Length: 458
Image (cartoon, rainbow, N blue to C red; front, top):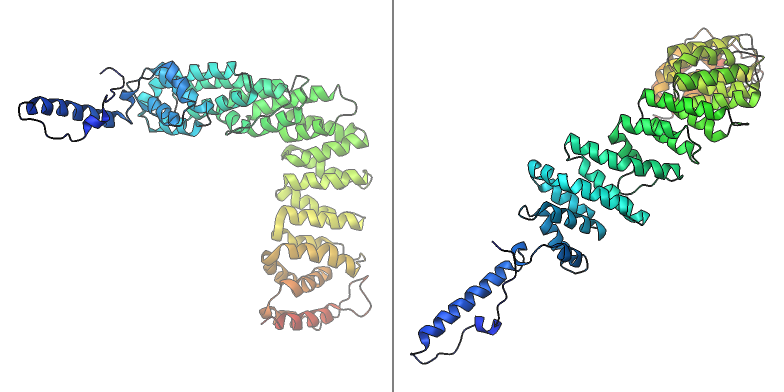
């Protein structure tokens, strides 16, 4: 059927006429029937694509009219329309901010029809994106092109990726991370290994936003791409004096064998600032192979105090049973009380409630403990564990280590419940005193006081 518009010449003629002389009645009836048929056809065609021809000129016109968006959407859906014109209609919808309608129209098509249309639409949209003058317009085409990816064949997905990646690469080189309806991270994640390879390569260039690129690579790249990116950053660091914080952070985000080796060298042989920066960077990603080094530095009384402080964060990041065991050894052996308290905090971070009792029992029995320190540096940390700490505290009431019993009693004042009163009262006769606590403040007296406090919770 030819596409066009049938116009009813005399709309009044579509209505009833006055009676005519009988000799003219048959002719008038035939004319009336023709006019009625024409009007019915016009009404039927009013919303039909067949009533108005789809041409490139009309597609451009419809972008500017009130009813144009509906006509463009209809052209995109109509399988009888030439694929080139359907692609033009899709791009026109994107130009007027109706990209969602393009997505909906394509999603509603049968798969085979959608794939056939994409053979024209993908290159057309790729060309429009490449030729777009304004960045905002290019971004809208990029988002629309990526939206096609989910319903495309593997061949078209490869074509889409090949069209998208160069533009994203150029934007990152210029120091921008342009996000539209679809974030750059989402797009690169969908691309897979090819995206990681491109990002790793970028880190070898003097780009202004290496940190942002490294962050993207850390999220979307595979292990090989991340390590290549880290190697490029290490080479960059060798040309930077001092090494900027952004480079340290980027290396920490990427991690991997090359970055870990670089960090180890700086911790063992770098100056104090480099060693501290390396330790801070290591807190962003687990590097289990560096746990022995981290525990060694954390336990080294001759090491720089600020480095040791950062190294505890490395041990916490790595975590695991070996980390917990190493921290408990530090509690038991280190000569500095604040280091022992720090190791206790790290042990709870690593092992949660499971580390509570062994960590408390590791504190040296002959050391001096101020009540205010026990309250601030032990009890308050235990309280942060919440109800999970309660079973361990009940076990600690029976510990052979006085500090463990006293700390458990003090912690139960906030974490205990009425049913804990009898076990606490059983400690009432415990006359043990903690060296450094106020004179006369025995474990028994504290337990009796806390028993009364928790009983009142019933």
